[in-house]
Image 1 (spheres, one colour):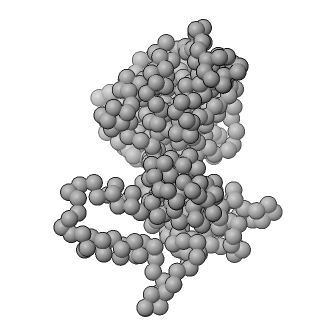
Image 2 (cartoon, one colour):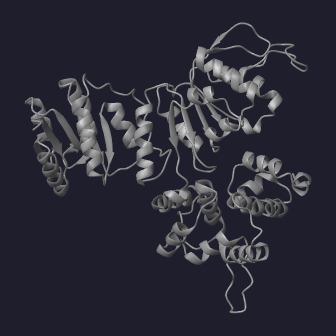
Amino acid sequence: MTGESILIADDDRSIRVVLDQALGRLGYRVRSTDKASTLWQWIGEGDGDLVITDVLMPDGNGLDLIPGIRKLRPELRIIAMSAQNTLLTAVRAAERGAFDYLAKPFDLDQLVGMVERALRLPGPPEPAAESAGGEGLPLIGRSPAMQAIYRVMARLMASDLTVTILGESGTGKELVARALHDYGKRRRGPFIAVNMAAIPRELIESELFGHEKGAFTGALGRGVGRFEQAAGGTLFLDEIGDMPPDAQTRLLRVLQDGEFTTVGGRQPIKADLRIVAATHRDLRQAIRQGQFREDLFYRLNVVPIRLPPLRERKEDIADLARHFLAAGAPAGEAPKALDAAAQERLRSHSWPGNVRELENLMRRMAVLYSQPVIGADIIETELAGTSPQEPDAGGRAESLSEATGRHLRQYFSAHQPGLPASGLYDRVLREVERPLLAIALEATRGNQIKAAELLGINRNTLRKKIRELDIEILRRLG
């Protein structure tokens, strides 16, 4: 029997009963209440070795109690729970000094694990630095995957640890980097973003570290690099997997020594900043292929955050769609809504372009359609292409998925048994990608910005794909 006392405050009776029974069976002494005032009374009387509190209660806010609890009893650890499953709730819990934060509905085993860690760790907990506040939502999502990310991010706000954000294109890697900056202790400094894939390889060292006058042909004066521009703030290195070897070596020295020199310079400059990197590539595979330094990987990968693709967090799609419809609504017009069938059709889509593809679709519909409620027929038309398809012999239009499946079956039939033994997935994707990019660029008369928007991908990603696929028509159009 443990004998430790746990105080629980939650206005949901069913949650109090479940926690009382589960923790009681483990040997803890449990007292529960539905009022913040009663919780505060118990704490003032010296009761409790741990507090589990809801955020919203009829007579108060659990988060508002935390600073007073910490002042009165700094050794008392607090676990905050909330059905307001946003990044800001997790950040505010950490700022006020909560030991941990748990989103509702929660997994009972997860909560028990938190309780055991909180009671086992020695010494009083350290609060996070206060953020600038604000009511905007930098990230949207109530799925378990996003809740796990919120909890990690909340713990990182008060630190300068280097973070590497991993995820497919369009998953929101820069949003996470900005949130780490905007709600972290360096928020008063600049946020400088640089895309490694968008800078010519011969200029990347000068772009990052700056250069001295005469360091190379055309260097007519001293150039200030991104590291100096980000002093006191955050430097976001996007697509770090595309950084060339020489620049990788210089970056490794910065991470090791905490200082750098400009191209052609000799005087070291202190690197007073936080580095957040991101990539859609598998860096471990790049290491095996000799394209990325293993020692740099371990310096960057202090805290990895993996952003799930949209197809792995489909329960967030409706919330994201509503947000983007509201953001894209023309001035003076009420935001459009989605009916139940439309929401279900969105959830069934595979979203190869991830959140960016969904955002572009919603913003397009917010402007192009006059009806206040969007139905599944409109979603189907938009997902299938920009214009209705011709009906088949049965009088029904063939969907893009059906047409693709028909052509693939024809291909498999014609080439069997000469199909490759492995790598078929990547091969098919590449073959589909080439004509898709060509069609998008032709439809936009070679305008890469419009083509990227049509495809739902970043312009830099489009430019990179154009180079990788080596298609002459794309070079002429671009």
